[in-house]
Amino acid sequence: MNKYIAFVLVVAAFIVQANAQCAQNASGTPGSCLCNLGYYGTNAEANGACNQCPTGTLTAAPSSSAGGNTNSGADITVCSVCDKNYYMNKSAGSTAGYKNTPAAAICNACPPGSGNSGVSVQGDVTQCNICTKNYYMTALPVAANAGQNIVAAAATCVFCPDGSSNANGATSVGNVSQCNTCLPNFYMQTAATGSKQAICQSCPIGSGNASGPTAVSDLSVCNICIKNYYMTATASTGVAAKCSPCPANSTNSGSTSISSISSCTCFDSNAVPLSSTITNCQCQNGYFGNVATVLGQLTGCKQCPKGQFTSAGANCNICTAGSTINSDQGGCTCNDSSTGTLPWNPLTNVCECQSGYYGNPSTATTKGTTGSCISCPKGTQSTSGSAQAASDCTQIPGAIVYSVIIYFSAALGTLAILI
Ligand SMILES: *[C@@H]1O[C@H](CO)[C@@H](O)[C@H](O)[C@H]1NC(C)=O
Ligand SMILES: *[C@@H]1O[C@H](CO)[C@@H](O)[C@H](O)[C@H]1NC(C)=O
Ligand SMILES: *[C@@H]1O[C@H](CO)[C@@H](O)[C@H](O)[C@H]1NC(C)=O
Ligand SMILES: *[C@@H]1O[C@H](CO)[C@@H](O)[C@H](O)[C@H]1NC(C)=O
Ligand SMILES: *[C@@H]1O[C@H](CO)[C@@H](O)[C@H](O)[C@H]1NC(C)=O
Ligand SMILES: *[C@@H]1O[C@H](CO)[C@@H](O)[C@H](O)[C@H]1NC(C)=O
Image (cartoon, protein in one colour):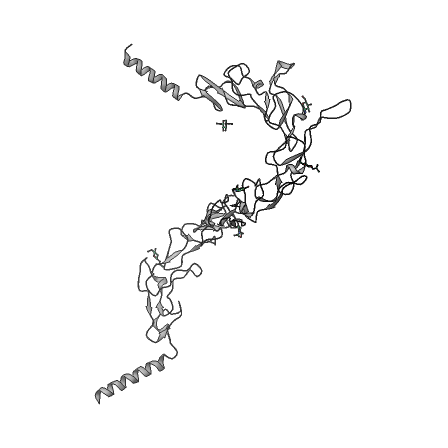
């Protein structure tokens, strides 16, 4: 075999190797893939499958040794340990009797508030021997004693009161003073003492603290805005961040720095984006109806039929004579928009002359027509839309007296020149 062919073969083998993959939920190198922690399968290569262990159960760390969740012969009995906060009612193994069905460990959830860091041997509820985050412990687990009619019990765990918390949970018996931190969105006024929990106060409306304070703190720890609020001023010594609510029917994920109403998104996908000028959720131009009032709800804004306009969700309408619909179906533009015509107005939907002009722009047959409105003759006036012909313009009161004076002064001037 010449060197060139050998080289090509090595490269080809490398490409095959690189393209090959492990099964879903497996990792490692093709040829020696292992199912991930919590998955079992007899073949973790691309053509095999790794199955998730039953709820509450896990595997030991992936391993190719016997009993590991390996390529070969790893059935559901590798789901032999319990996940954290579960106790083991029955260990994994093949059940005696009918067909010796292999079975995972049976792991039951610990009673609320109690927990553990995972167990690998069969036991009972006394395996739930700690209190989880935000609970304090008033009693250790109690072992069963059939003779004394005592049933097994988990550690007794009580929820921390009034916004106080226990960030790390409790591993020994104590009292409410184990609640020495505050829940997120509270600030700590007084630290936990001998037999009292930390005194925690709610952050002012809309403001919050994502991690939850662990020490006495002033309002300045309320330095974020919670979901559905945007920040108008940052927190400073003794003062919480100022947070404004998103308008009804809109949402955001909160904010950690100055932001605006435009950080809020209307639930309705066909709503106008919020801005300093659009401060409530409404259907966008060309769509009529009511915006969705629930996140994820179908749009309540429906597009108007072709040739009809609407804005702010109002009913669809046909453009008035002498106007042309805008491309976004949000309104119309008068065919004549030259001097003297009033711009099209959604409230009136007419094309007419402004005050002081006469004419009829509703007959303008093409976009860009000019001169439909003409100034009323000197000394006359009109209110907008009232005059179609020059004779519809009315005398300006006092204009007669004024023109008579002009006439007389002109006459006097002429007289003076003649003299
Ligand atoms: C297992 O695989 C599925 C499909 O790829 C994936 O959606 C899932 O997140 C995986 N589970 C874990 C725990 O990685
Ligand atoms: C533990 O398992 C046994 C059967 O193996 C069952 O009778 C019992 O109800 C289980 N206990 C709990 C708390 O699930
Ligand atoms: C509560 O627990 C704390 C800390 O362990 C202890 O100092 C205090 O005496 C206890 N209070 C009561 C009433 O037992
Ligand atoms: C929450 O409070 C802690 C002080 O306990 C502070 O350091 C932190 O910046 C605050 N904000 C957030 C977002 O956690
Ligand atoms: C929220 O949407 C509903 C339905 O469109 C509407 O009736 C309500 O007025 C909206 N709320 C606000 C404040 O815009
Ligand atoms: C206004 O102009 C458009 C486009 O040029 C035209 O289609 C429409 O018929 C005109 N309106 C009137 C009343 O003539």
